[in-house]
Image (cartoon, rainbow, N blue to C red):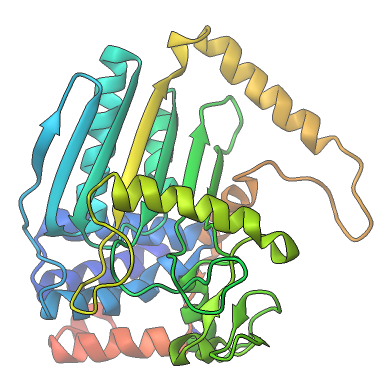
Length: 349
């Protein structure tokens, strides 16, 4: 498993995307989000995704250079059609517009439909936090194939349906939540397959509905479980709400269309903190609250308490300095793509 510097991974992915048809700006945005995911330790949403995106470009499921249109809007709301463009470029622009509207009206919300995979949700809520706003985003895969069984069922009927919220603060690292409403993100199953690893109990059931630790079972009729183990009704309930916000409110619908393609429908919102209380006081108290939590005496087997988002901050510092481990299966796919595009020498393979 090679360890590769972040800037080299960025350069490799960008060159491959451009060779597949993306323009310079699109490829730059996609790779910034992907490598940020790797740096944060979310390898399931990092460089491993590039071969999949290139496959989708080749079959027309992602359209480089697609238009970005506003179908409906008010001072505080927007409905956006991404026309099957890269989800990263579509949603980054959508969140920036939502932030701009919240600056004028204090709160704003947006729905987005018909776009590719948007990756790690915290990428977008952190945009709002950096603008001194509370950011929220939820995402759903439309009517593409589902991977999560609702609580009590054995057939996948829901997406992993993640959500993220980020909060501005005076902390050194950002405070944010970024989570799937399933027991784990589907990308982590793909990562385990690529690394030939088993997965923990409680993540998956096989086609017969029995618990399994074999990640390959997901591709053979199995299903992810909702968040919560024996209390999985909580994760299942959250997932239903996300599906309504991102599937029904966006007009994508629910269920599965066998002719469909992956589509990340999104609901985004931004809340201007200064509209509710003095910004400096709020940011100071959020940091004080985080330190209050961190001062909790550790439980047996733990070294201490981390605030939400702190582990990603620590990983980013480590991986920026020491590089990112890339599983052999992904590295080989990148090298094969470079060979196919006659970029191997340029990219140092």
